[in-house]
Image (cartoon, rainbow, N blue to C red; front, side, top):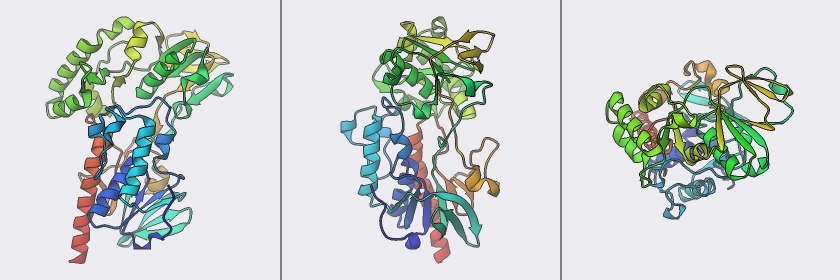
Length: 386
């Protein structure tokens, strides 16, 4: 997709980022009669999704993952693949006729009287409002392990992992027991890695992707989200135990935190099982303690043990990376996430979409939040015109 040729002078709102959050907000604004332009540093929409590993599928159901005004085609199946989701984003942008400036990086945002000054790689632009939708998974994070720079084997962040085929026959250490780490471990097993180890710092919660193999767990999550945390925790833990069994017997200790408590209070999504439990039962994935550092090829583990892998994949997460953009505006919390009100506004005319991690599904929440922001900006526009 190419950026449209007209300039953004007629746009009232700048949307930073052409991922699902940015596209959804721009479509909701357009539907509300508010001209908006999307500013995207990459050369295509959904750039981060294009770079994900090949086997990636949405962990949320297709019917609950569509953006405002256009659902994901039924042909994509219940669990939408990476490529099908990217194709959907491209179709979505064309369907809504969104105004997108590709290859235009936003460096800094500043209030300028009643408007916002947006410093870009092409100079300064001014808008009535700005919506930041660059997402919470913007900057790959790797811990500063002692000796990491001297590890002689392949060492990469999960953002650079593409397929287990690249590690066929190797001893691979995956560090980090989030969804990326768990799924990469399964992919390595399926592509013939000689040995796959998964290093965890704290025991994770694990839940099935579908209850009884039929009902997407997301539907259950939406229902449980209306209950007190203690009740939701008890139901979710019982369901996981019934469907997945005792994972402690497979070397994966249980989390001491309730599944819903961890999601709501710690913003920690459980591992959605897409093959990890089967790989543990088959002794194809081995659980190890946390990595503390490297000595040549040796990875030192918590408790004193060591392993000598051929390759290390750091599935150690991301940071939002908002400091350069808005760090000077006192709108970020200690963890670097934006501090917003119910309309996702952090300062007058400055909104953030796509930075939550709800148990009911991130894409579903983006759709809800897109309409919420559009409604707030429509009301602001009406007040200004009165």
